[in-house]
Image 1 (cartoon, one colour):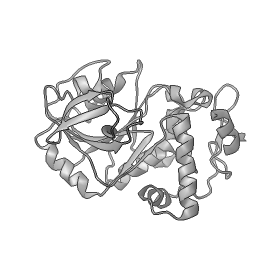
Image 2 (cartoon, one colour; image 1 turned 90 degrees about the vertical axis):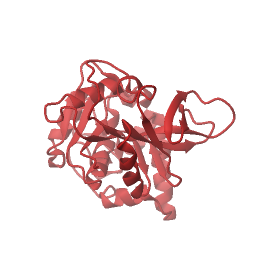
Image 3 (cartoon, rainbow, N blue to C red; image 1 turned 90 degrees about the horizontal axis):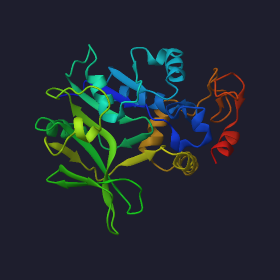
Length: 290
């Protein structure tokens, strides 16, 4: 088995990104000289996946313009949702495309999260996919983390709930491989764990890597902490799969266009929230977020 398609989920409303999230869609937030969305496409292509889809809803026209403005996104297909379909509906919307037609295995990614682990774990996941609807990747998180807990029996998902007790737990990372073949089509808005990975009716496998790096940019506060962590690791030369990935994809070099200038992490917007050539600095952006 192999991974045929990548689907980057990027249709959120950005409500957790503060005031600037109302002006810049989260997938276009910068990590040094690239956007989160560009980095996800880089990640997919490093995986050898060239059939890439992205969904969008909030500020979809800005995302569409950004994709059309770069040859990097040639062959990447944008699926604009109106209305917002939720994560289950988004998958079915992808699956119903004429050039997908509920066939193939899909790598699912959230635009604002990155998970790195040993490549052989993907081979193990594909083996588990043979007898499963999906193989999702779980991660161990500290008890104070604000995520849902997933409970497993023999590497199979059996329950999702708010964490109870004073213990570390496993949560779904947002990264997983889904088998579209045989998935019952559903039209419109639906939940992921109801119409796609309904673990009560089908086998949904979960792998929890022992060694991993998880980088989250999902809220304004977490985004700033993650940027600060990158800075710290660069200064200390600490070994990191994510930093290696950023280096391989030229994140730290100079770049000049209407969206970026050569100053660190600068973005362009005017008072109405439209992109323009007059940039605000990274420092100003941080103050805006805070």
